[in-house]
Image (cartoon, rainbow, N blue to C red):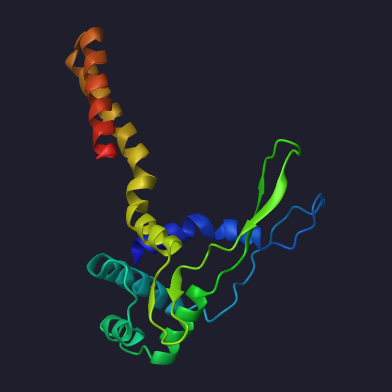
Length: 196
């Protein structure tokens, strides 16, 4: 769950800007602390994150088959004992309903134009029987949440490693040529690690 919090923390303010009613070119630039809507207890978010994680595991095991909601409910109740079928159904309906995302794109004729996508639903749901599976966006979000710590900290860690090696080389009084050699070996090792 912690990796989801890190991922959401990096994107939440972007969503706020997307949904902003602020007038263009307004000289009022101050932003007040707003109270977020909802219960603010994390219940719905926990259900959603646990469900997405579970569905990714099922996606691997069943090769992308639809999963009955009852199976999801039984699994999620192990982590969230108070979860009801109605609560799970609400989360599934929310995650399977697309929301339009607006953005700008440069074009050959105009400086930029407004575009949009509705490819934002994280789940696909069979309408008649209600079985669910991850959509492509859902798979990407779970995969990204699992890699977010590595993505956010890898550059910082690499810089710390190079700095530590440079400090060691300086203290060891190794020649400049050998110093460059060791730095290039370190960079190659870091790149190899990142690519694997």
